[in-house]
Amino acid sequence: MYKDAADSPASWSVTLVDHLVTARGDLIDDGWALIEPHLPLGERGPIPDLRRQFDAVMWRFRTGSPWRDLPAEYGPWSTVYDRFRSWAKTGVLQRLMDAVIAEAAARGQVDLELVAWTPPPPAPTTTRRNGLGP
Image 1 (spheres, rainbow, N blue to C red):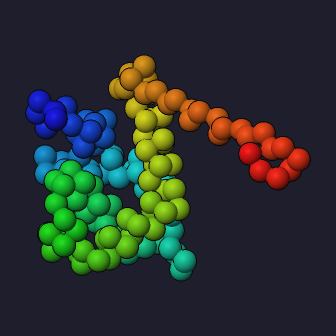
Image 2: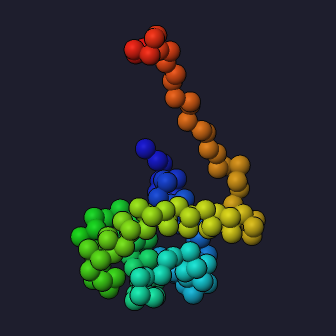
């Protein structure tokens, strides 16, 4: 396990943008200005309460609480959960994380030597005899 909460993976993303959030964890205006351009519009234009929904998703992962325990001030938990699932499924969260890391690197606020990616090994190959199987 981790020695303290600051060492846990849940704290890493918060540390990356800690100067962009309030003491409670909601985004300040500068933080929202960085995040908002990377979030999609709704089918009929801007999504009402998008910032509040984003803060709610961040609250849930920061606290580790179940979705159903989301504070009422963030709106219905099921709405926030559905928004999170949509963002996760369509790659919005991955693109957002990539953009935030790039911005932090440009500002000199992240050490990219800590970021590593190892490609998966190639798929095993099989030799077929007479096309009838391995």
